[in-house]
Length: 544
Image 1 (cartoon, helix red, strand yellow):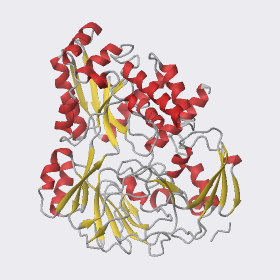
Image 2 (image 1 turned 135 degrees about the horizontal axis):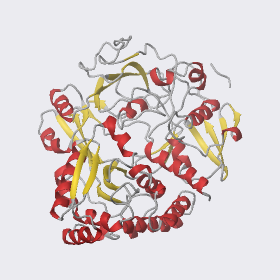
Image 3 (image 1 turned 45 degrees about the vertical axis):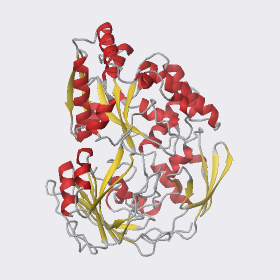
C-alpha cells in the first residue's frame, strides 16, 4: 500500500483541441487483476487461456451477464492508445475519472471531491481518501500526476495534454495536487475529465500490464481478454461508488453488420449497434427492442485542398460538388431517415454556439443541381475524375454512392473507393490518395464549438492548417482565441466568424446528424448513458 499567440502556441492549442474531441478515456492500470489473462485469436499465435471467474463463455450468457457486440479491437487495453469507438467503452468499465460531464452539460465529481482555480494556469485538486485500486494500492496524488503525464507519452501519437507542465506540478499531500499548465485552454478541465486514472506503482513496475492486465478503481475487473475475440469483466464487490446491478460483462467482437444483426436476433448477444438499414427489421423481432438516441458522430464530406488534389485553390469546384449533393436522399437511404440535415458547418448545439451560424451560404441554399452544373462547367471540373474514399461501413459506402450518382447528373465523375478499416487511416492522412472523403464529425451536447471546429478542420489530408485558403489566417487565429477565452459571448462571436469562413470556402460539407440505434434484449432495463466523457455507457443496466 502506498503512503503517500505564435504559430508554435497555436499548434499546441490545436493539439489539445483534437485530443479533447477524439479521446473518450485515457489512463490505464496494471498488476494483480485476479485471474486476468490475455491471448491472441486463432489466427495469431498463442491459444486462449481461461482464468477463474470465466465459467460463462461469451456465447452462453446468463441473467447475471450482459453480452455486448463490439466492432473493433486494437490489440491493447491501454486507454491512451486504444482505438475503436466501442471497445473503449469496455475499458471504461475498469477505470474511474477525476470528474466527467453528463448529458446535461453538468460537471460531476468522481475521484476528485473539489477543484480550486488558484490562477489561470494553476488548479488545486482534492481527492477522495477512501479509494483503492483492485490490487489494493491506494489512489493518491502521485497516481494523478503519473496518469496525466502518461497521456503525453504515446508512441507515434501526439500528447493529449501538451499544456501540462509536469515539472511545475506539485503534490501538496497524498490527496491534494496542484496542476500547472504552460498555456490556458477553456477545454483543459474537460480534457482532464476524460482521462482514466492509472496506478503509478504497478504501471512503472511492469508497463506491459497497461496493455494486457489493466487495474483501475472502477466497478469491474478484467478476467479474460482474447485479442480480436472477446473481453470479459466481472464486478468487484469492494467498489467504492454506486454498485452496478450487472455482475458480468462480455464484449464479443463482431466486425460484420450482418453478424451483429444475426447475433441480436438469435440471442447470442444482448446488445449490439444496429446498421441503419436494419433498424425496422430488428424492431420487428420478438424479445428485442431498439433504443435510438442522438449519435456521438455525424457524417461530413471533406475536401482535400492540397496541391495534389483536383480541388486545390478552387472553392467553386468544391461548391459544385456540394450543391449537387441531395442530403435528404442521403439521410433517407443511408441512414434510414433517422437523422437531420445540419444547418451549420459545426454542430449548432454546442454550449457556446448560437443560431446565427445557421443557414450560412450553402446551408441556407441546400440542394441546387442547376447551380452545381454551372459551377462544375465554369471551374473546369466537368470531365475530370474525382476520387472519393470512405471507411467501408455501409452508411459511408452508400453515402459515397449517392454522391457519385448526384454528381453524375451534373457532369461530375466520381470514383468511389471503399476501404477496410485497416487501410482507411493510412489513406486519410495521405494527401495524394484522394480528393474527397466521407468521415465522422463530433456532435454536442456538452462541449464547445471551438473544440469541434478544430476536429472538423483537422480531418482532410491531415489538417486544413497545412494548406492555404482565403481567410485561413483569421480562421485559425479566431480558433486559438475561442479555445482560450473564458468569455462565452466573445467565443460565440468567434465561432460565428469561423463558421462563415468555412461555409464560404467550402472546406467541408456537413451532411447528416444521425441517431444511434442499439438493439437490446427486451428484458434488459436501463438506457445507454450519453454525454461528454461519461465514465461508462453501461453502468445503469439491469435485468428485470
